[in-house]
Length: 363
Ligand SMILES: *Cc1c(COP(=O)(O)O)cnc(C)c1O
Image 1: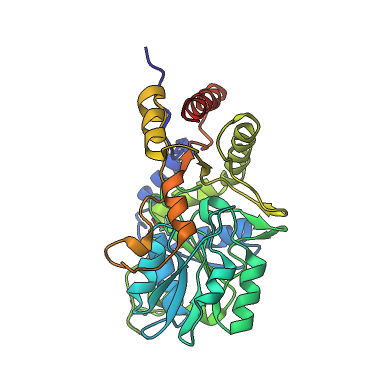
Image 2 (image 1 turned 180 degrees about the horizontal axis):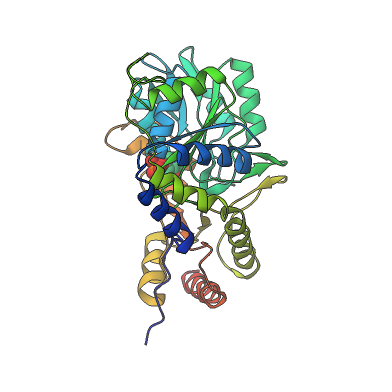
């Protein structure tokens, strides 16, 4: 009998989330209301050291509205990684601005500050790096570049709830930052996004943009969207927020177990002073990556993720002839093992055994 399938990700939804949703349903106040307002306050205090938080209906909406609120639009260039989920570049393109792709570094697979500097032009309005896989990008280097060239810094923190650099949390570095609350992220609201900002003007425009341009009912001030989060989603998110810290510690313990026991592959590195929250535990394999992923699934019944097999600069909507060698290398050689907090000790042992066996066979 083959052992149970180990999924690459697994949202944890329990009785607390069910009760919270039920209470909202019983109240009849389904759309954006007090649950959303409480969720924003709690998210701000738990994950953002008090910086303002604005809830929206998805992480992608958060990026899109954040860019618009910060004044990004046609004629602007925003430098982004190509090695990320397409939402990063999509949100830039949706404002009418142009996403410009820069290469990544191969230690943490985040945007490479030195390459970004070569991509700056007189149309560059902002840089939007991603805290990829839950490891913060080089915040100090990007702060310095943004200041030197007088461009804005935004954070795609979709995968990095609670990550930090020398104790300072991600989401508190840029003019705005976005956290995704999609089910496979480190915490969820079903679908949803949270945007943080320390600029009162940006916060106000975010609140207007998500609600048809209205602060007061029917006194529309600008052309806006319906990007509101519902009370139902916020109720789930509020419960998850009380648990994400413990889940992160479990992810980190799982990662430490892999670090200590995996052989023959490259394990993730963590920069000095950086806190990695292991949205993904991403390894680099010395052999045919796709074959490795297939064997994990077929021979060992273990799921894994390949993020991201086609870099954005080669996707149809963005196709460019950019030369991004590190991006190409990562796209061909990395895969992400299950590291989520639902893994049992025997799951972890099975994963180690399978990866070590395949690495040995392939080398
Ligand atoms: C998930 C994700 C997004 C988009 O978030 P959604 O909530 O799915 O819209 C954006 N950027 C990155 C890096 C992501 O991983």
